[in-house]
Length: 402
Length: 161
Image 1: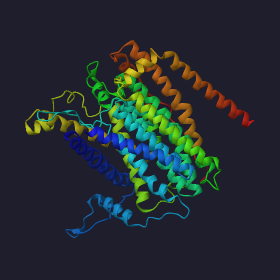
Image 2 (image 1 turned 180 degrees about the horizontal axis):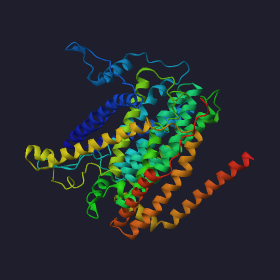
Image 3 (image 1 turned 90 degrees about the vertical axis):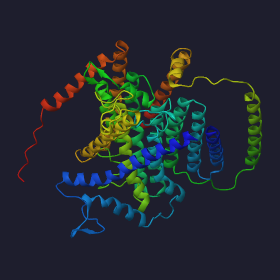
Image 4 (image 1 turned 45 degrees about the vertical axis):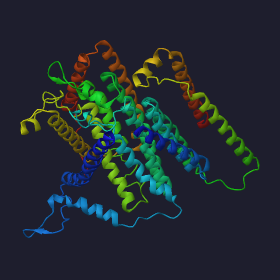
């Protein structure tokens, strides 16, 4: 009974409060951030009352409420000849699969209590956790494909086909990039991967995936961004020019697709933080089972609860940073062409991921303490930086007589 | 306690899904019910402490093979079955039901009281077994898949030219 109750509490706190709340805030963040990058102000008007004679807008945060109300009270329109059942279910599929993935992600260190024993801050600790993340993620494609098909609209069907082809292609690269991490940390269970990232390589470098496997981190991020169907991989929707799979959806059906996209951002951030950024751990400060720095010193205690609170805070901050980074990517890069998209997936990411597996296996076999892998990783990061800083600049071509 | 509840939820879902596959009028709905059944069976694998099998079931069958099925059904735009069914269908149905009952009876007889111990279904154990005891079978299967891929490419190229 205790197991059921604690699992439900964890689900509600992590999946519903943290992930859904963050996704809702992200809808506002994206609008504000896109506004700033285009020299606008963004949404700052919605308000219910006036405070000191001025509308109480709260930085535009009330637009989240206004948007939700608008979505709920619009007419849910179903086209004639559409497959009504599938049309209604399709928006739920992507939404649910994203939430299921969250159940596998550890969001804090184990809570050691006297009364109830050890409570893992992870909804489901399953041996094949990472494989299940991939498996459940691969089901998300049905939501998109079925939405396009059930609409009984050729443009929606084409959008759904583009989306499925894209996610099927990038799933392969996604699965292969993860193999390098599995080899280095020797487990498919997500909390074991987080624990393996504890400690320092050479006494100063955190044992994080991004330092041990920088190449895999970049490849994973690219492939996962393609899976979330966001710019520069937003061909399935292409909301400004070509028409996407949710063409026929209105009101909350469309709302589910939109919110689902933001939940996917949160989920991708959670998985990325778990695999490559040390999960809930903060190097030099928290990592062991008892040490705590923020809540512990605030309340003058050094116990498991303070430690767990610290871990959750660190995890939340890391996830928030990754979300903000994804928003920045969307408003920085232009969209790919479809042939470029396919070429990148099959002819660039796939061979590079295979090469990464080969190199990682070789270096881990040579030195299981991951020291050499750390050397190579740091060298690679330095090379990335060098290429970006000192690489050849393309001078913009002069405009001809405008 | 909780395992029993989850088992019955998964088992009933699997049976209902399987019935849905048979009874669905449109091919696409049949395929969707099949995906549902596969996921429900994956839940049962999880309860049997075989997480790797569960993950592979969803990843390979529900997430990859069935995607292709659904793709083909969508592209061919198959509608519901039309027209009267031929007479042999009812005979086929009856014999299918008989075979089903017989198979269930044999399965229960074979499995009940056999005292089969659970094997270690962890990813590590399966991985070790695959590259030691079952190495030849594993490599043979991968060669078979390679042959299939090459064959598909050859067939595709022939149709192009």
